[in-house]
Length: 218
Image (tube, rainbow, N blue to C red; front, side, top):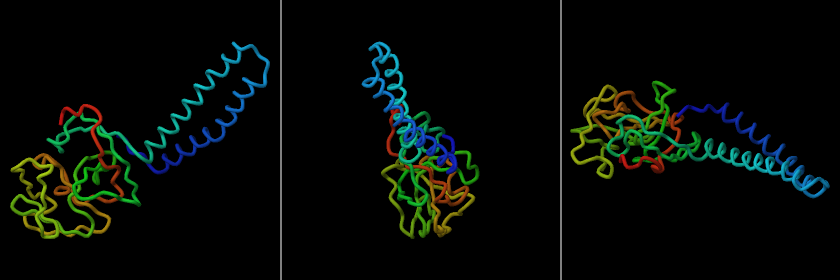
């Protein structure tokens, strides 16, 4: 899924607003005039108004789709094995867009975000630590604010979480404001915050809502 910059969002929004608000009223007036004001033959009226009606319908649907994609929901195709067994290769997920100035993600949420090391690549991982919390890995378990967290709802029994480059075993790290700590469910095969550090809040794109296609892979 390609990254959409704020400038592109603004440009697309303005274009569709102009098309909808400026041309649509004129088009509707034209259709009414053709149908009720002119004395043209019925076949000619139909020949003119049917294509125009289809065009306006398409314009309205396209505008709605663009606004929905930019500000509300966004599809995501699962690639890789970092979130197995919960989310597997080829699954299609529907996600809700997260606004940078109004973050609504909590521990346990699965999010889509731009990689801190490669902004052109999007990752999918689970939120484990939130701003202001402390996090530690000890004896293959994850501790937040010195309390071992329960991950049995989404991790298979016996899953081990090992420390990596960013944090060593039993090292307590404080999560700075505006940062998150994320982990892949497939702890042995995931490049996550244990490797590259904290996730900036502004990198978060959306939050996974549900799988809508090829869900049998789960």
